[in-house]
Image (cartoon, rainbow, N blue to C red; front, side, top):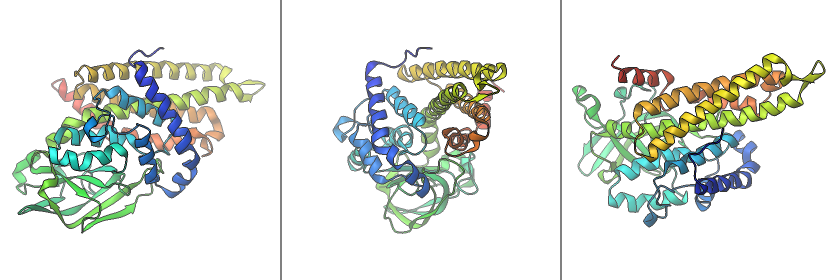
Length: 382
């Protein structure tokens, strides 16, 4: 089914993304997977190719557009390529909007030029060993010390935890237990600050080239000039940005599943059993027909959500519906593709096997499927 949400300029960016992935990423896939981290230089090259910072104002070296469809094009092409590529979605869709919405003039001048070029890599540190989806359980503290905060605590499952130069750390700035969601602030910790330590690079089941790490803060003195947004308003700042992050996850999930489906469809035409292509058996033909239909339907909902962003109408509930449905569908489709590959589907030399483990996290990060359904249910007065 033809998609109509994208304009010619979006398709031009799509071609640029494909060329970048072929030229700058494909030759390094095996090494990045083996080493568990993408070269920092890849981010710089992505900036040079115009794949970073198109939502950053032109005065800071960005593209100066707030059209989220550009973000979606990058997400789709990187998802179709596979996991061994720089995490541009984390930069463009998750972190840059925090700075666009919350940074003051001085912070923008100080930080945004590096974001646009890819020289400054970003991360956000929310999750702790004892606090995942329940942000109210965060214990990392930032104690007032005149013109500085003293940050103590630990974070885990931090994407870009090794490569990051600026880490937006969710800290408890109000120690009063009764403060509830009004107890947290976003504080930017910079590479090289004394007491800021990188912990283990975590050994993940999938997304092996994405550097995910533990972070530790031991009496880190952070200038109050690094407070992002308002003190004790951090929870509300986080909630404001979550819809676009969740939409981005859904976009990537379906694009990745579509790529695996297309490869599987060709495989079922080429692979023969009992003297005929395995795709021609009625059961397999029905499974392929179902997947094709479901992916088309999901793309149409995604495109409606993308148009809603352009029109300023996307709601948190819409994004939650997109996130849980698309990630669960991607998980289902890729699992069925493994089955259609038979024993070869279990071999890592086949993309479908790697996609099976890479995609599994999508129903968890950015808010679990269960959290998404709870948000939707509450919106119905339940």
